[in-house]
Length: 448
Ligand code: PLP
Figure (cartoon, protein in one colour):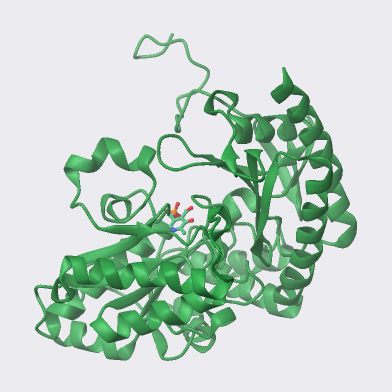
């Protein structure tokens, strides 16, 4: 019996009462629980473990940093791990993005983008700009600011009275459209929704537009037509609206380039990155912005925002070592080529499983959408919990995939298949065999 009178196995709690086995150890793309069961990590955790687990080069770099200094508070000391990583990120970031603000995770990175954008417009005398337009569906984080711009109803609804309501436009879910438009025109159609929303809100009140260049878990690896990206950039320029790229999931190589923005040659005004930055070896995220935005803020009383663990030396040492591994081992190239191979294999599954409605994504950010009818894209009845069930069946077969169920917010079930960027052709088989078995089992359950 515990202090609170509950007879529970653990003092920990997360989102629900469901519990998983305890992790024993992990190496490369495999993980073992304390019962000796092996799993292949085909979701890199939550699209985090980009270089695989327990790479000795990263462990050694972290150990070396720990032996020098484990913590140095930013108001008292600079640290060279953070300084070096900032330089390296600035070199790799698109266009003029060159000033780096470290944080400990994705929500903090997104919050930082919102605060920097707002303080910038104050500094340049545009105080009336405060609205941040985002897309529905989308996920930008759990803190109240990031949640206000998140387009995901189940997480949003309970806290709505505590947040400023922010305008949303539809994400470019072109695969659901049954019109006669070309892909190019569909991209423009969705991008033009931003212009319409800016005009509806009043351009002088709009601070920023935030988007994931390739959608994450809320949309299931949604990629827009190429025409979408430049049109969005042009609209933001036309109305003086800052374009924020949330690359928390897509950044650090997941889509086959270091930042996904590179695929379309877009330079956003501010960018958030996290998950793959230290690839799960330490909590780390960053906001990257150009000096033209940062300097006015620093000159007008400074950036009124910060976190105790910002630029933590151990996390930044991990970040530097992860970047070394990505570059030494050619992981961007592998993400692109293995991503293409995996996507082709996932697409082949559509021939055997008619309830796979779509296979999409870029690099190793890939998803399958499960539907009742591929022609109409009608979703599977919610009581089947199809994606959740598939994840559980796969887990029992030693395959870790990722899901987000679309309850009440938008339509559809999807699962994400996003292994570490180190994945080899042989290991792809270790994903596809149990996935095929899991889909077969789900199919028979759906018929019952
Ligand atoms: N933005 C995107 C696109 C994400 O995918 C996530 C997390 O999944 C976040 C922000 C929030 O990151 P974190 O969970 O590290 O706070």
